[in-house]
Image (tube, rainbow over all chains, first blue to last red; front, top):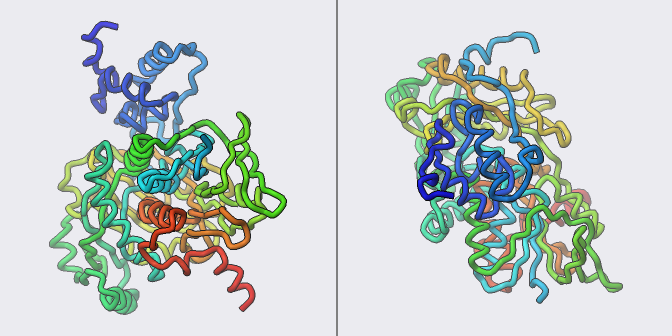
Length: 93
Length: 383
């Protein structure tokens, strides 16, 4: 892979570059969650909506897995950012 | 070459055991059924707390805090440890007299802390609600990134020639006819060893049963909400929580809640805390999030329009007296426990690993471990 790719921003929210994700995989990370814990990729405002596919692709390329075989990262509520006062308001379960 | 010690569990406690044991020269193999920092250690907040009751927990906290200062320099990457201090807040005037007594008792144990009136609180933290009864400041408390601390301890152990084997579950422990440990069994094969450390957290009872040892640890679920990143001005002290939060969380049945606001180095707030016995259910409950966020807004109304971006739940390894179980098991030669830390694994991880290393390698323990033994539960049953 060309050297210029190393600085390519993969996770824009947390400003994580391709090189950092590759380094995490070289250190032993083998899932999206493990990459997230090491690099913060996917921890930002969009919670991986933008970078998830890109990180999956890098992981697949580096480890020789098929993109479809990669375990998805954990998604939990809220699906999109929500104001705390709305979250604290009684509503439907 | 077979390992001197097999550590079971790659959370902060197991990784601290692997680090201190390998630093003392032992050949260590750590077995983790998932990935390092994939269980309870990835699902907490950030507080290194020095005032957990009973007194033995305070001693463990204070010892661990000193170790964190050393680890910040020793470990191969930044674990975001910093001495932030913490503020404990009393909501209701009726609870103020008892709180004064509890702070005086902590001062009598030489803990550095001071009472704050309602006005002093407002001056220090202008965003707090104005109708709170008061609080106390604990300037020696700190904050750490639990993910980085766990991963860095594992990496440092590797550099000391420890082997960290992930995705390897222990399915059995073998003993000789006279009862001594001889091997650990995994799906990949048998690993000969005469010393095992059970640092399996909420799964430690399962590992205990492999050698007929009953460990009274139960999973207790706690929720956290993560907010968007905020300016550091939102709270000046990075850890603000309800006074007596652990007592509140332990009282009664159902879901217990206590406000717990922590701002991490990245600027996000981690809002806690909840506790409930829900078996091995790691899922997030909307109704718990709702009530927990309401508790936090009661303390810090300025958060109303702040956005939550994520939430998670973790299982805390609850021990019946809220004191961890650390040390040798009298009935099985070579079997050691470092489990049952409840919400204090991040605080007590380093000292737990150091004590285990000292006990196994025959050094004088950093502090007396009698009160931490498994046999304390047996003695209490007999009393």
